[in-house]
Amino acid sequence: MMLYLRLFLEFFKAGLFAIGGGMATVPFLQDIARKTGWYTAGDLADMIAVSESTPGPIGVNMATYVGYTTVHSHYGPVAGILGAVTATVGLVTPSVIIILIIAKFLEKFRDNRYVNAAMYGLRAASVALISSAGISVVLIAVFRIGSFSEWRSAVIDYRCFVLAVVILILTRWVPKVKKMHPVVFIAASALIGIVFHMSGPV
Amino acid sequence: MIYLELFIAFAKIGVLTFGGGYAMLPIIQREIVEKKKWVTEAEVMDYYAIGQCTPGVIAVNTATFTGRHIAGNLGGICATAGVVFPSIVIITFIAALIRGFAYFKPVQDALAGIRVCVCVLIFNAVVKMWKKAVVDRVTLILYALILAASVFWHASPILMVVIAAAAGLIVKGRAET
Image (cartoon, chains in turn green, yellow):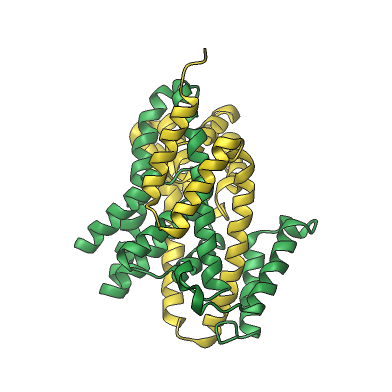
């Protein structure tokens, strides 16, 4: 019971403070991982990939995934489903309450000087937090370490490095290809990972 | 039964939205504005804009707004439940599948490859947001400070968000003189 309550509360907090949609949830999920140990930073990268390649809003997908896996590892698959629902409801509750309140005075809210001023700072924070989450995924995926403090044991996996550069070029500069859905690149990376035995030593 | 109708319409949107965020706007327009005629084009744009500057998932915020507009608070809740429902079913299924096969070597290799791809996807999201978020010297400094605090000291993102909102209010919140 305590686990469900904690899941609900942690995701309630993420839903309340993650502003800017989608990837904005990632830094909060990372914070939850550090505090609770429910899942590792590596698991989080897998969750992002699954959420990006399945239907539905990314934030919701990640809450469902975390809720399921966390409760499953304690109480088995059936309880896992309840965990998925708990985390998702937790994530969604604050925004439903806030929107139902805001809807009453829509116009005033949108043109409010203080709202715009706060947003000015919040947008910068959102990008900074997502950048930081991105950096830790790079540390795990390419350098095989959990944080900068472990730099001594870092290895440079050149296969991962080359793959990253290729995907970067394809998704940013190649016409037509860069418009493709992320699921295409995720599937291709999975194949390349299998072919080059990427989980093994360099 | 309007509540059931809202639930089904938004469950459909949930299924059709791949990748979230901007991907769902055209689908909402087709389903809610053109087919159902529940709201106007301009109203959807408003909901979407406000969804971006309020906490939470944008798709969920838009669903809550539309549902409330059509059928009051309960309508808002039904629409939200609808947009979330497909994710819960699909993701639970996939999560169970991945857990079952995680010890398998090819699955680990595939996940290692996917993680590299995720790095690039996050980087691309950052570049896209950067243009709208980091617009002057103040936001650049704010960006650098928060990035350093969370990379090197693992600062709480909640604290960072609160500080950034306060900084925005201090810099931009004063009345124009």
